[in-house]
Length: 316
Ligand code: COA
Image (cartoon, rainbow, N blue to C red):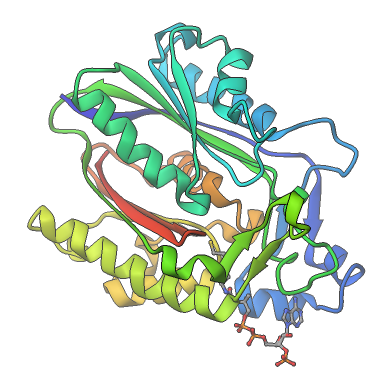
């Protein structure tokens, strides 16, 4: 049996922050942001909103369950990626478990920053393949706006808030997650980080150029390596859904892989970088646009602070 993605769900704040809004906040311009990143707008929770990462994650999870036709009490595990957890502990995953009533699940957070979803899909498929779980929720629950220095033009233009979720379920053998490959390099920990409140560095800090280069070279490499393990090449991919950090990164990876534009999913222009929510949010929109058809070979990939990156190959 395969571990198929049986349902997707999203939850987005209503509040839209445009590049024009950012022009009034920091020394930047719509033109600079658009040419360097491709981002036009992002969703941001209002400063006084009582909503937490778990609220976005729980709403997305409930929609994913409903679309999968799976009850919350059938979920065996909940894996949550997120850069700003509700609390240091308990995990956001446990808080979401309670909010959605998944009383038979075990739940924990995955600290792999923007790669959290791809890491989670790998773990979920192993839990299903091993027979331990029938259904696993993998969720990106991100309130990045609370970790952004809104006076730092290098970073504040990039990020957005979102929740997005996928239910992975036991399905037919010829569908689902075929293969995953994950990699990490703690030697690059300094190039993208969010410090600890206790150390007074609780804002996202980034060496943008370094992150850019690593993202392009390592994501393309891990996708090629994952495909090679199955005797495949990028030419076999029907759709590539990668972490939406920057349209220039997506274009550069697409070019390295030799993928035509129409095979590379791009929605970063509307949401900015939503970290671990970005891959399931892009998948959700790809499905809504009719771009995911049964039998297609779909490549998921992401890279984030750690550095941590990886790829999942999914037969849709
Ligand atoms: N508006 C206007 N100017 C800005 C700016 C902004 N929002 N942010 C930076 N600048 C300035 C810089 O200060 C620099 O000025 P200087 O030359 O006078 O020092 C200039 O623009 C060029 O900056 P540079 O760093 O060369 O731009 P870049 O082409 O590398 O683009 C990023 C910057 C951040 C968009 C790009 O490096 C990037 O996307 N990196 C990856 C980030 C990422 O995806 N992180 C998360 C991964 S999970």
